[in-house]
Figure 1: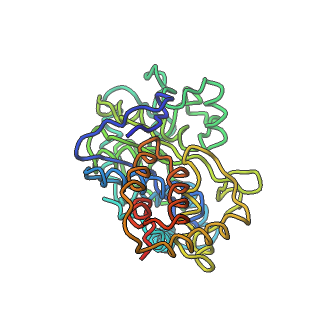
Figure 2 (figure 1 turned 180 degrees about the vertical axis):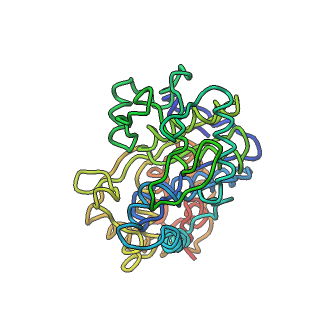
Figure 3 (figure 1 turned 90 degrees about the horizontal axis):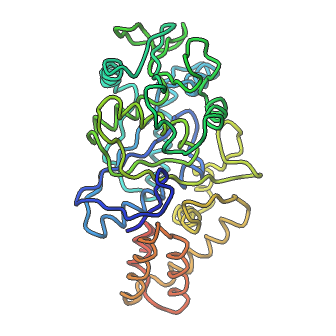
Length: 374
């Protein structure tokens, strides 16, 4: 199998052993699952299915960020406890994932369940001289890490611009450098708080994924993924703090999924241009929603439009009509080859479309994409 590696900026051999460890950034549960979320999680689901088909065991950890600025602000707006908000949205997310036929996550840990791990992790970074305390907060000192930026390959000004746009608070007066990032922060009076040796507060944005990956999968993981909007600052910061804490390589392969757009902008909660999976499920078979995702290549951004679901409703009907025909080993081999070529799901879908139209068996090939026909 060959996959594009974000840090190396090229398609490379995905060289792994019998057990493949994976970490994909999960949801911040303050709103429902939208099609952009589905595109990310379906991608790693298809990857796992092909790896298992090849004989590997996969362990995919997907975290739940149940305490951060976004969920606390939404809970404050609604007048509810932040964990009650999270519980309802996680239940809706789980229902959507089950409907989309996702393989169960190996583990789905929560930030609030990892406070002890986070405290210990921050202690390691401080002890190794890569962090400092100021204003009741603990910051990672990027000046101690010369290759900061090696995942994204952005220059300093671009990183500052993205940090400002994506919650990095570059004007924080307690920072030594605008790119330094928070490991631990003081809580506001109405926010949850935990005691630590450097003062009460709550975790910064990036720290939970490092602590959870280390706890659940070990020092070095085979593949780390998420949406392409997480390359910087989230994954860039996650890498350096992890390697600063352990002294070991954090991730062997970085894999990111391009954005889904609507009205010319990426689908995001902050913009409100969302198509929710739960709404699509009211009118469409979840298998058609899955097909709507995999007809696009994971590294290519795409635009949602009104033709997407009717087209894939028809595709699903054609595939179901072809179910039960004698198996076609040539088709299955060709679909495997497509997936091994940087997870080329559009080519796999086109191959199955052609086989269905020609009256050939497609069940095994469709199953490899997570689309059961019977």
